Image (tube, rainbow, N blue to C red):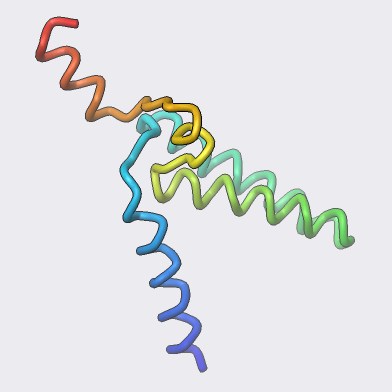
Length: 92
């Protein structure tokens, strides 16, 4: 059973990492740290609303871990480090 859960989690992470990275490294770190704190706070409430808050925190952690934000993609925003380094090399 644990192997099945691990495989499911691994495939979920792979699914999210297939999309290109569109978040900068500092923003990724902030998402992971902030999401972790929000998730812990939500779980400490021990209520249904706390569980919803914890889920939102988990989504932020996933956003930071994967480096991809679907909202940024929909809005055409790319703040990835790769784009910034290409712009620096080209003199923009």
